[in-house]
Picture (cartoon, rainbow, N blue to C red):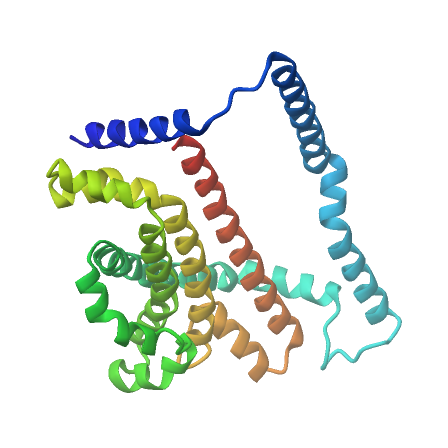
Length: 298
């Protein structure tokens, strides 16, 4: 039946197109084709240039310049070791923490917490987001509470989470859940709302079962927006785990950041900040890569 829905929609679109298209003459067609081919060649050329050696140089030149200037500034006595660590000191701290195993333990603990809270948030956002996207009544019923809770940042929930769950793992997972849930929920709803209304009309006309229609039509059509929400939700989860670990934790990258502050070690603090940034970047790149693959497949 879903194939009938898609076929019917294609027929409607084809009919609308046939009714409005004015066919150009052969000269205009050849000119348009040659112009389009030239534009595609220029776009491919720019893409190769951007992704080649020149692209990587452009991508890395600013960080290299910043690190070099930072190293020179620290080497010639521009900063005090107790206030601002040099790149050499940060490398030494990295070797120290990596050799002791603390670095890998803290990274693994933070990633495990993020995945736990993120997956719970993804499941909840999928159920509520799809429900709100396909049912106006359900959306109306939860809209007020969602609109009130959504602007509250995840960090603001930390005191209440500690009161409810203590300083154990549950409070941290709850904060991660809050940070990841709302970006995914909003994008799922927006993605479904952006689907052509004729899909729903034809689905009702052919009496397709609701769950089958959602699974085979709604989710694939809204998938690009859903993946954008997943990307934002994962970023929010990573931000919140660091904030949660800075309060009442004995492991994790956020704990490492707080511990460096308490020991007055700016090298450890900056190392933890760099780890947060690098892992966040890798997570974002992974989700974007998967999004491109899925969207191209669709």
